[in-house]
Length: 391
Figure (cartoon, rainbow, N blue to C red):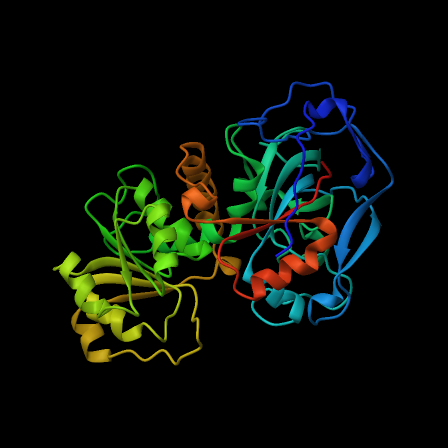
């Protein structure tokens, strides 16, 4: 895998961003330059164009093209965000191929739903955001093909942007979005569980996270731990088990080396309260075997594509709740709750990435967005990030 190394050139206010065709003339103090993390800061003047990745037809990553576009102006209810880091998720390559929930529309599209950056301009009718604010973005390009984050400036709806605390890096901010919001939703849909997450919200609960080495699984482990749950996770290898343990799971079950149901029942004799499920079909029997009355199985994926077969008699006798989780069509109230709670968890240091936190980071420059997409499509373990602002 290609890797990119950068040299820290702070303070950012002293540099011209030649590669991004942006000149930083900001003189305000810079927030967020923590732990040696480079922070480009907001800008007051920009060149008339910017670098962007686009695709005009569905297909493989060869459809992605580096080009220059005019820098757009925000309309009512919109923000212009100077993107620092863009996050890549499976939904992004599926969209590029024309499949999946977020399939790109015909015409020119900018890929990638998630990212982090700095508010550069504020449209009419917006309260709560100002020039220079640090933000993280989630599903910015949903039904807005020009609003992807693989470009130096993006126009996003204000309700798809959330405050990025000063102590949280842009890398973490770009890693939130789809994974963390999906995990939050899955953890807050139980009949006997909380609608919001905060320290203690899941105290006394046992949560089973399927696929703890994945991005959503990683976020679910960390959010559940932050909220006070006992966390069990399933993995397919020892290496993935080490990542899930580093993420914070109390118990790791390698389902290829042991009877997963038997092991989970030994850990939680009364059954688990909630399952965060990535393989609804493959794990349908397991999920029913390890739950109890009024447990919830929150499914956000069906890895492997196996048919989802439910033992109706057992499910109804246990009054199980099956909740399917798709954040693209989630209601406004759930979105607001997720944004606030995920931001709070990040501020508390509960949502972290990197080798030591169970989610290795793989970096690419903007011009290698195609390689970044290929890495995610190939199943690279960890978080793939694209450095959009030049360093």
